[in-house]
Image 1 (cartoon, rainbow, N blue to C red):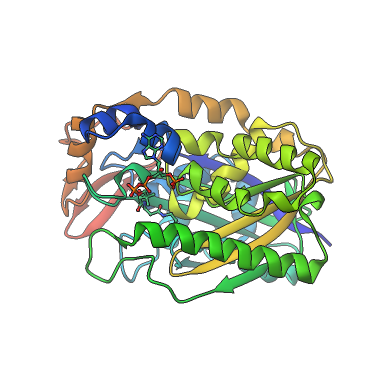
Image 2: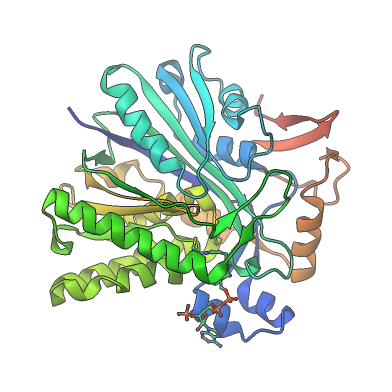
Length: 388
Ligand code: COA
């Protein structure tokens, strides 16, 4: 019996800022952002795209009418919740028209939550072979204008349909999680932006990776040569590379070359999107699947990390014909057809994002052509545009 990712898709808003221009505006050497951090463009959210609309936009293309009848659970992983009580999964369930007898809830542990969500989904459907679970990772990464974390912002969502006999990846029974109480990144209730200890967050990430990987290798009797590629949580593309470099010398030369070159394919999309928090690992997975030539039966190792902190190393096996399930042209078009905004316009979008009232029809940039978008916030209730 195999359970795993049957379908996967991502959505990013249609605006981005050029990182070299952001560096110039901040009077920083552009190479710090382009090479030191490893980001070329950063997705910018208009006010009309929040975690609900982005999540629905990511899921809509992979959910058929038949899936809607069989989805028994919708889980949204996020660390940029728009409500402290009501789960975004409830609104997404409604927007997508999923059958009503479903469990819908939100999960949180910084950038990690989509990983326990897919593991929970796997356990849930083990005894319910007819059911499917929709897992959505959706976030708007915001540290603040001119803050230390500003170059590592972004926005976007990844949707995954977890089922029996998956068409893309089988999730293996080998996950190892590592928890350590550390204040590297956190957002106390009431704070608009996270607090972050930048240098500590990089060290905590690498330590969590090494602990998870070493324990995984010990328990499973595996070494790096067993993996065709490794995918990492990618807050910025240099971060996963640092983690990979920290263990790469344990591998033979062929494995080193393979894992290093596949890392570049795995972070290609992330380089043009930025940090999407919970979805970053899974955007990287899509990037790997769509930019590297792989074969059914090959094993991919995945490292998920959420500050605070929890890390998890697990593996998945590619299904023969997985590539037929991917929308490679659609994804390239989504990224390439975005509009560049000036640093000034990015700042203006950013400042309006937390408005408690909003009306799409009177908003300056009321040209959101996505299928789902925030139409208005009135009396603290969010209303979304949806297809007829
Ligand atoms: N050319 C090339 N590289 C340059 C450079 C230049 N002109 N100037 C600086 N760099 C390099 C630095 O050497 C450093 O590389 P290293 O980490 O390999 O040493 C890198 O660019 C970043 O420089 P740093 O001084 O560490 O930047 P910073 O103090 O502005 O902080 C972050 C960077 C990522 C810590 C900060 O943006 C942040 O806090 N982000 C949010 C938290 C986060 O994403 N944490 C990750 C774990 S979850």
